[in-house]
Amino acid sequence: MKLGERILLNDIANGLEGVAIPVVNDLDDDGPPNIVYLQKRRALPIPDDNGENLVEYLKKE
Image 1 (tube, rainbow, N blue to C red):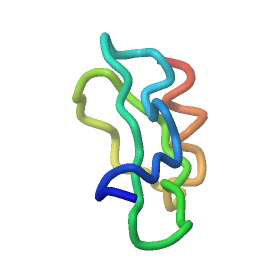
Image 2: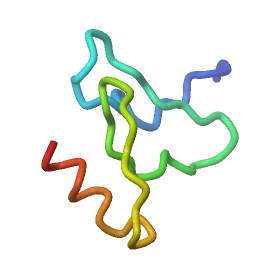
Image 3: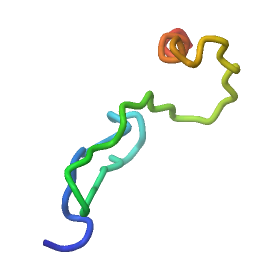
């Protein structure tokens, strides 16, 4: 197997970008962390709840 061939996820952006963004890991079987993928950068408020409601905040936008 060549370096970069162990694709763990075909598209971390779930189709939000013009091209797929694969996730590879040649070292072990660890996949990517659970993330909320954003197409553009933006400032987020400083959470007062240790970030517990950040995912819900992002879903509203």
